[in-house]
Length: 407
Image (cartoon, rainbow, N blue to C red; front, side):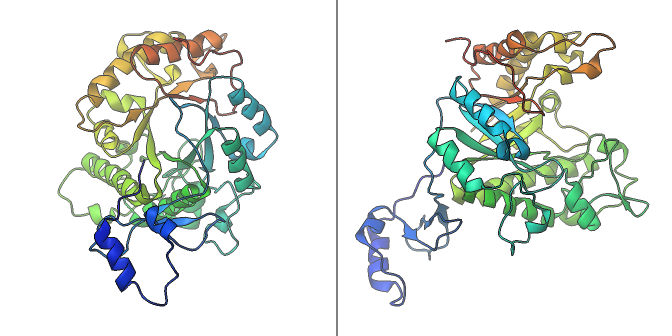
């Protein structure tokens, strides 16, 4: 997390003798805090911090006004906008408060591309917003009061809303926006305008008080290597780069992550990225543009989606869904080896499974309950990975789980 930088006596003298006479008065308290107060935004305070006393004031550190402490280890659950703003929120709040859970990952830009709360009516994002979270400030105050660490999930390049509004920013086929077999459209990671669109939303989330901005779907559509030459789309600044399509996609995705991290630095938030677990098993994914090591090198937190149900027998486990401990144990060892090769590795905070996978079975479905969830957590903990996030798309989580099984 970003900490305020020291001014130094030189800058204080510059402020006292060279600051324009029509500026607001700077109090001794403000100088002692090494901050300059700007106008309020979202009813909270914006603060500026100066890293070089000789340079003009150009960088700021945002203070949402909320007080959230980083937990001993993040142990979280996922909430849709509907759950965060609806009746289910109370039961999920109770789940966190009565267990060793301590974190909520809340949709701010959802899988369709909607903002999950209403910004001001003059916001360029008002038309793509939904009032799922009717009062985001009240929600943040509840999280603060209950000492629940807030993470904002922002779905980036899967975005049917933006694709429909701006087909030129998406992938097209025969003059129509291309969609996958689930009817989902993606927007183009080569397009810098798409980057800025999502970063504006990320900054709104930081201003609301979220402590971690988690980007999901930071990738091209699955299997893109089989259709990259059939779809119509721009390659933007990457058009004339003398590398193949796989490398171009990796460059675009990595560049977005690095740029997002830089842009959000002044907000004092962590930047995390969700990534396919299998991305750690290959040098780089051929279609979707994810290079595990390069993404990890540009974030504060890496969140691999390591649901046992989503694996083939890669680790020599014939039916991974039925052996959650073995799968997570094998993956953790691989990830630890990869992160050890990075000079400044991010924190590992994987997504684990708290749902059944009926599509894998022709008969009775293997059920995930207390034993299966705890097995995944135990495997992580035994490999030195203390943080995790639980995924259940319907936000219905197993009761009675010991979330700290090694204690």
